[in-house]
Image (cartoon, one colour):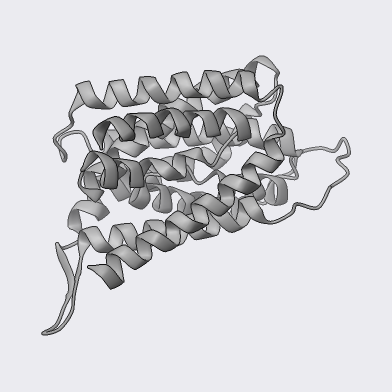
Length: 264
């Protein structure tokens, strides 16, 4: 199962390289169900893996000058604070048994996995749904500061709880609340995801026992997958792949809910 987990690490990287996002949503299920890592520790590991992987993707967009640094700071700051606070204070404060009755117990681990599965379903719908072609015009980037603050805090808390990047939430926010062209939004999103994920991971140092040897090997394999995906991206339709991957994520999200609530 562990070998299968490392194979999936390449698949996660391939998906990130091919589609520009979405692959990181598989990281936690792979760590929990194939490697045998506890859900809380898996979300911590995922933050590091997603952060490092997104940084590689962001570097590619930086070379093409498709990252808006001012927006990354404005949107990223509230997200950074929220993700660090969530990992450092909120996650450790959640009791092991959240709800306990004579016939039902909702544990911390089950809550995290079910919450993660719900986010997976939302991400899957985002990937499957056919996007309307928007005619992009050259326009000045403007900021809706109150909404950016709310969205940044919300995305930071979600990232802190489940260890996934949340690109499917960030990209629409940048397009809607900052009037940003799509390609620029994708590159800027990757930079925001990388920084907030790595900062969030810092909140776990001292709180969790980190197996650095395993974490660095898994991350390195994922990054190799990204480079392969970036090369294949030039030959394969990323949009069709993203839709197909979306259906797979939808299936995985449903499987997690069934396994954690019904089977358990």
